[in-house]
Length: 233
Image (cartoon, rainbow, N blue to C red; front, side, top):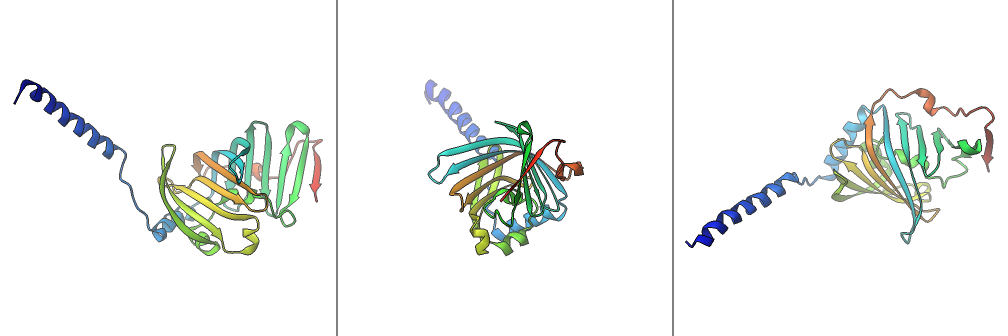
């Protein structure tokens, strides 16, 4: 063996070992059966009481052109109430309470009030998709297709494509992708196709915390004195 080979061979072996270790460092890739994944979602839903998370909401038209981008904090409880407080690019609050949606504009001292039974195109109630729903709920309400696995940030996620079974739901949301964090089995990302508006809405969640003792006042439709309430017909 020449002098150069004596030098190069150990170097090659070390490089090979490093590459092997790097591939193991990524962690195993698990292929989930759909029913097994839904059982994991069931376990998350069984003891769900509340959730708080940072969320970025990006709206695009169906050609992919970005229409808007909002960032803020979302809160939800087991009863299905949802509050989304945006802090960028401007401050506003969305509150879903039973069949009513409130949008509060603090700088303008006004709140818009929508009846969800009359404004069926509103997509806000679907924000809770994957948080309050059990695996059985998803299976009962949607035609489910596995999308496999992918990384969102540093999180390994499992994807489900959801096509609503009910025609009235399809009129609002034609289809959804639900990407579930395999560490917590809570949503990492939702991609909603808003049929009535011709938009695609992507919600990406970070810093998700479950079962906190949230202040009940977060979910009450109480606004500062002097706020103008506008019912949207």
